[in-house]
Amino acid sequence: MKFKGIIFDLDGTAIPNIKGGKPSNELKELIKKAQKSFVVSIATGRVYHLCENLLKELSLKHPCVISGGTQVVDPISGNVLWEKLIEEESLEEILNILKPYSYEIFFSDDPNGRIASQKLVSKERFINIKYIGSRDSENIMKQLKLLTNIVAHKVSSWKKGTFDIHITNSKATKDHAIKFVLEKLSLKKEEVIGVGDSDNDLPIFDSVGFKVAMGNSTKALKEKADYIGLTVDEDGLVEIITKKLLNQVL
Image 1 (cartoon, helix red, strand yellow):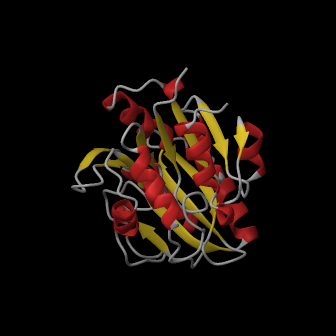
Image 2: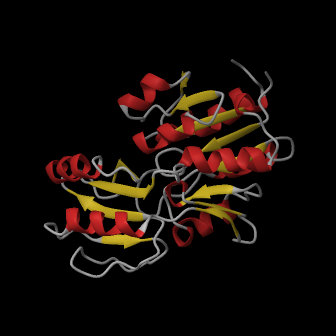
Image 3: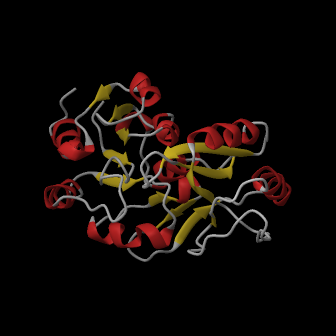
């Protein structure tokens, strides 16, 4: 089967997982070249205002998955092509779990973090709890997993030694959003390469035919991968696009 496209994560995959991380010039030029013949897209946990500049810097033109899989946007116009909200009942349950903690919580595209004691907006599609300590992150995740209508993923934070937790509707993961993208672009699952580095990229693997983990990936992602590339610090995505997409080397 000839690959016709690639979908990859941003932080820890296309760019270093640090605040202000940028793609290399080599990667930017390679994506321009690849898009002449192939579909190139992203699937990121970032909300639109935190990835808009990167979408433009990478010159992406195909529909992109953002906000942890709760939205698909046109990277050129910024128009929302698909989205899924968290149910109001689930929002209240999430709030009750977070009340004992004082971590900053970011909702949908709101750039201003709030704490759990503040009122949730009724219509939310993405919740990001920031810079959580290791023990608290385990306790919060354990409670969130008991809720049936949401899905939560723990990812490494920009602040070393801490974690973020991304929460979405259980029917709004990167898997669900990528399926929408593939249908829109008339692509088969088997024709697409998926690349990630963290546990919240596992849904990407559910949606593609060839699964690639970065060298800096979590153990869970590497165990599911068909191929393990170089690390993000080694610009591993350049090697993956060149070898697996452009040259179709299996």
